[in-house]
Length: 48
Image (cartoon, rainbow, N blue to C red):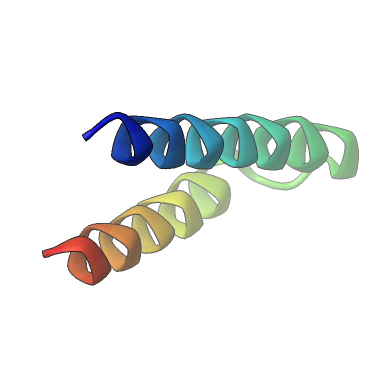
C-alpha cells in the first residue's frame, strides 16, 4: 500500500509541475484542467 501512495505522490508532483509549466506558457486554464482530468482518469483506469 505504501508504494501506491508514493506513486500517487509522484503523480501529484507531475501535475503541479505541469500547472507551473502551463502558467509559464500562459495557456488557458480550462485546457490545462481538461488535460489533467484526462491524465488522472487514465491513471485511475490503469490501477483499477
